[in-house]
Image 1 (cartoon, helix red, strand yellow):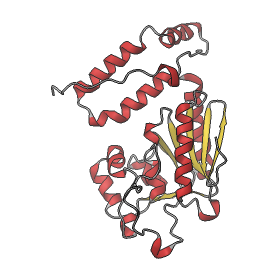
Image 2: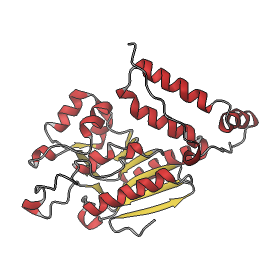
Image 3: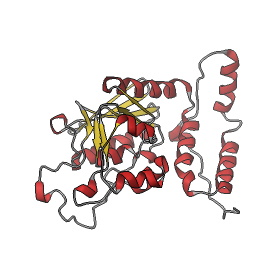
Image 4: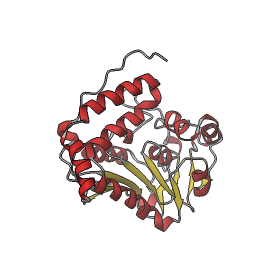
Length: 276
């Protein structure tokens, strides 16, 4: 792990906490932040000691979107060969560990669209949330035309993307954008509670496989999901964790998982043509 400039990385007891760290700029997104976040994500994916990840922001905001201090040059033309509208690689959904976005304050523009790539979101009642790009002469980014409708449906997604309006935490919760909305000083603790439950009680390979198929499922038919679930069940059944889980449950003790994401990852199903 390298020394970071625009993020901070902490790893302990199975939980990695990534903090966007430009507090004087309310964690406005920079190219350096994007590169560093991608590097941190890759570490979390590869390190078996990481069981769950929390993404949060330093200070009073999560991330207020693109750094617009360059004024007219903020959205200047880019070299086509190296520009992507989704500037963090890999995206959060490709990391084989659950990622919980702890939106400790405002998350707008790219700040929110990056959070939409996570598996769960906890937001602050006091925060403001929105995809504002159409009010800045640009358009939404970071795969949000894909992530947002799968969370809230097409009509609610349109109400955010086409207007660029801001909503508060309670409205974000009511429309299904976030898992919970709590006072700002409770956001990180709430996210940590979920991460701790995952780290302490779930089988890492089972969680990783489930996450990948869950994100993939909306592009698959019912038959293809059945096929994948069946193949992956056959892969897990009879292995060490499938034995340990029931034995630990009956003995009323904590399980001792053996399978590792890095070493025991299955050959992923190749899907047959859908029947329905």
